[in-house]
Amino acid sequence: MVAVSRMRQLRGMEIVACRGRIVRIGQNQFKVQSQSSDGRYTVEFKRRAWTCECPDYRKRRKCKHITTTCPYLPIKDRRGEAV
Image (cartoon, rainbow, N blue to C red; front, side):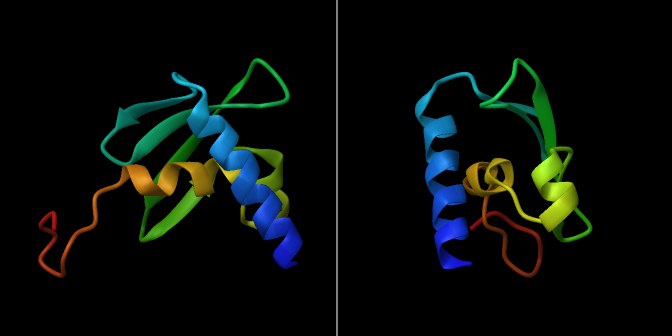
């Protein structure tokens, strides 16, 4: 399982390395370019959890698109203010 998580993280870093592959479309919503097709997946942080439209997320509830997008949301304190 560790190897799969590490591989997902490395693939996510490849997405970040290519400019324009992540586009913010809302406060907590992003479009992330697929590495295997011309498509884009919507990644969203809602109800205190990440979601993605990709097949990997649907199957495992984890994916490289979420791993890649997490750093784009600011860290907030308990009052909801940016830290």
